[in-house]
Image (cartoon, rainbow, N blue to C red; front, top):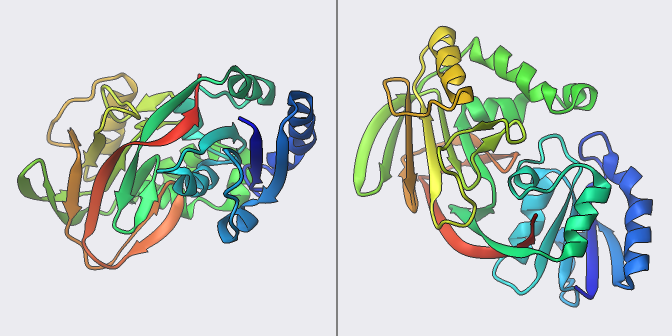
Length: 285
């Protein structure tokens, strides 16, 4: 870690990145690093080949954009979580406390993690269709600014009261099935609500597999019953939910909205999802 580029999303979370800027400047000066600060927009439109370490200051959407350009290179991703969810940071053991997050970078523990490709897009966290997409894409920014991560929980309850099942044809692990589901989540990291809930019994970001969760609950009562089972760690295949791991997956699709690492995306063709093992170098606990 010699040449450091710090990428800010100044609108993430409650604009916490702005508060962090002075302390990050002090940390990098004290460490004797060569460094530069840029916005996420500047990072996406310019070449920064001379930097060996990229620090992403923002939420999961920011981290995903930075990770796309770090993947398959010798550059190392560092995360200063300052978004609403910060799920990848939580999975890697990176706290939201700035001082503790900087200590992880200072300690220099680096691991390689997997990534996903979803058609022509890369993803480090998860892709969600149906109910999961509604929560991520339709929760108002004003609600997130006011309540932080709790806003997703509030939105989750509201959207659970108006579940809309859709029919999907899914091919994975050599089998093709037609199902009616209210939610499909394909995740490299299955944690939700920080690390309080997991949609997998053994989710790892470096095992060469992704986790698939299919929710088939048809009404709020069966939804909340299955949600309670997930909270209690009772994650078993049943009439309301299905769990499995895969390396590739195809979902028949003509036009669907989803989210990819928290960013709303419209997919116009069949959805092809693949795992890319050990794609990204990242600082972790």
